[in-house]
Length: 324
Image (cartoon, rainbow, N blue to C red):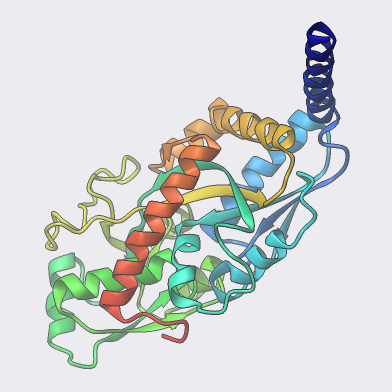
């Protein structure tokens, strides 16, 4: 009798393993939608399109980048959270994803319950960029310029709670200066605004800034990280340029709807880690000053928890809300 029970248990385990293998083998079984919760042209969108192309080449299935901007990524994230959890919907997010729970009190989804982490892809610094007509040419000159103007100046961001918003608010806190936040619906529109001179200052992703710096349509004053950017070795960090202790970096991660089969999630994770290490992608990210991560789902989940706690502290200190 014991032998029969043991045989039955082994058969059940084997069947489960076989079904998991079959699920992994059959995935993907159709087009994949990669939701980017911002308009085209921003750092998240640029990276998503590069990864989508490589995923399409690897799996032979269409990978459609679906831009769903608005409310600092919460509209697109809500769509992903409510999508069918079959592995055919993915969500690409920047570090602003960890800020949203602190500033949007009635999110239509739970950031930790309704979305499952796949991997943190990479992290990279941002550049404090200004329109070429803006007088300050260094961080110290910027601080002096702002302190001489009690009403401050306007600055752009890609939305309330976005990385540029947090990075600039931390700069204000640490320097005792004033600037008025002008949120745009994504990095693309914010870049257009500062290049056009609608606003004089924007803390932006290097991949967004690079062509405009090269053409002279923007000028960079500093790097947000604690180390200089390899693509701009002569550009000082904000910390060494006049704000000791300042250090902030952006990151990009991939999530799927909660309930996505484990076999599909594991296959997607393995493929994304492989893709960011493809020489073409790896070298491109390195030129942008990015550090490749490729964390496990469990590591990314723990990282998100830490990032949400850190963001909550900055949001409280700066008095950031969904409307400012």
